[in-house]
Image 1 (cartoon, rainbow, N blue to C red):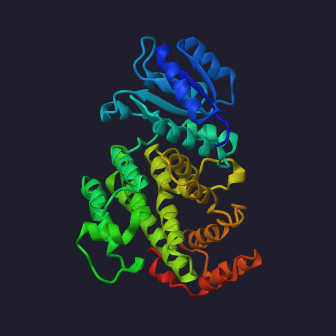
Image 2: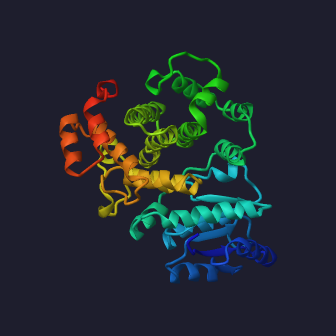
Image 3: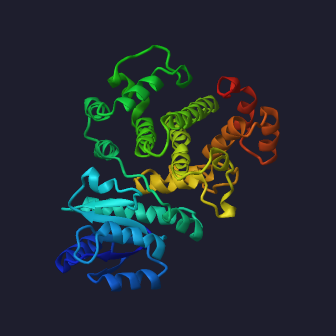
Amino acid sequence: MSSIAVVILDDDAFLLKVLQRTIQRSFEDVEIMTTSDIDEFWQLLKTKDDIDLVLSDYLMPQMNGLDVLEQCISQNPYPVRALLTGDMSLSTMMRQPNVVHAYLAKPFNQADITSLFNNVAALKSLPFAFNVRRQLGAMISFPVYPIILKELRDLVQSNEFDLHDITHVVSQEPIITAKLLQLANSAYLGFVRPTSSIDEAVSRLGTTILMAITTSLLVGKNFESSIPTAVHEKQLDIAANYASCVKRFAKQVGFDLHDQELLFSVALLSFVGKIILLSQGESEACIEYEKTMSDQYTCSHFISAYVLKLWGYDTNMCSLLMSCHDLAGTDDNTLIPLNHTLFIVRQILFYAQTPSQLRLYCELYEVDATLCKVISEFDWESYLLT
């Protein structure tokens, strides 16, 4: 884990010492600054520009922890903002606009600390320009980490679950169940025999795709008060079509099932950032104009990567989200073919490139010959939205 710096604010001196010891038990290189004084806290935040994480208690006599984190946005928006609280009720978490990136529940344990700090370190390792990180940190409304998503992630990561455990969780949300059944019956994903069983739908799709679908739906639900349902459904349909196309293209190229599922998830979750921008009043036309990383602009894909990394998603997935707009977007040899696949499909579906034009362009940039060949052979008409 790369070295990170954290400032912790809590009026309980004993708890500060416990937190510090718990953190240092797993992360010896973390720079930890603790304080019980709000004025000292603001001074640290103003004078140190290398702070990666701010952790504030919720109930304090001087200032409410949510107010502290909200003021952090104007004082120094770069650090990840985490709230330490014994009240994980939705009424606490759903303050609008939400200013909390992560929650650390009391009583916390070593696993909670490890998860938070690993996510912060992984976020720091992603190639965001400094001012882009500040723009992302200053987002006026950050989506609340959905409880159902946490339950699913805990189940999947435990490796001690069966199919009924998964279906029990997703069945709490009828909209998730409906979308899983829809995709599990999709001919575009290669399914021929229909099914009405949610157990079978989960089995067909697998946990990687399941997590992506659940995340995409719950992010939309988070902003249902600021985005019309029709707008959310339209964006989700576009993303689902893109994801299905990417998976089918990858299968035709010869990628294994793991990479097909990864690519499907990246494509589907690319719309998370669009939903967040729409919730903040951006127009669809403005969002569609995606600038490159060199422009140091917080495009929707960067927002998606930022949110998903803080929610514990795989770093490769986040890296692909950040690079999919550029053939030279990554120098990681294991990700280059996946990056090229996403780029190719995006150019056809969203930028009106013809297969012949795109193949010539890709050959010029020495893209893998198999990928170039499939560009000409693939059934693009099935996925071109009218």
